[in-house]
Length: 235
Image 1 (cartoon, helix red, strand yellow):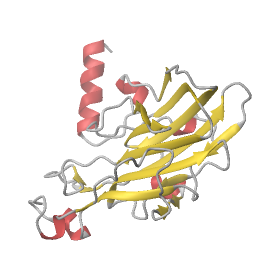
Image 2 (cartoon, rainbow, N blue to C red; image 1 turned 120 degrees about the horizontal axis):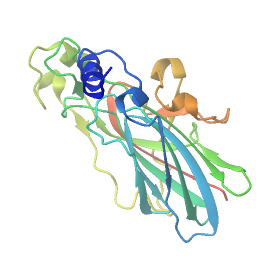
Image 3 (cartoon, helix red, strand yellow; image 1 turned 180 degrees about the vertical axis):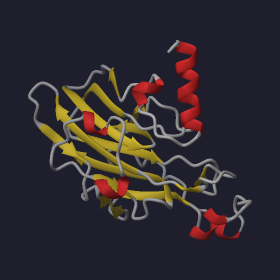
Image 4 (cartoon, rainbow, N blue to C red; image 1 turned 135 degrees about the vertical axis):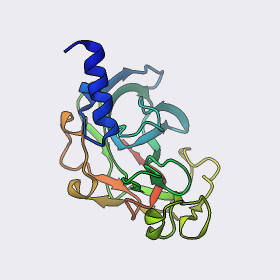
């Protein structure tokens, strides 16, 4: 098939809601990046998020998901390496895809629905291979945006941002929440979700996850759209 015809066929499949593997769409299932840095330990991190993340380490922004947040079906893994000092304070902003603050996706189509999130990550000493930390129930998380407030919003023919069932609950990110000294003891523990509930794909199976690494999110996979999570390890 000619390249133009192949691209057109794939585009039609995606528009029709047919799942097309990332590699067939010209995307990598696992993106790799070497970030460098000046810390005392070379660290390797593997991350998979539905749909997007921004990562800070020891209080400084480090890396964002290579697939833009507003990309539908943006499933891919990330494998990055960087230098940092231990102990390591890791802070993620996780986001599930939503078209607007109703929390819905595919608005106006017959697939209009609430999306669902999920995230997993593991960090290793790149020199020794020692596992430094993984996502699990020990992490602390704060839900920064939950929408819609009622699931009936998903069945409305014209869902309106901030109106009735389609309203949102939002909480501003606390100042300094990515910093090593931030007190997150008042945040809830991360909720661990099964692979069956999250349905990870495109890149997830290409990473050899340690058995202790768990899929985490807020309590509500569908309603919690922006979740801030952090942990400290390598002490």
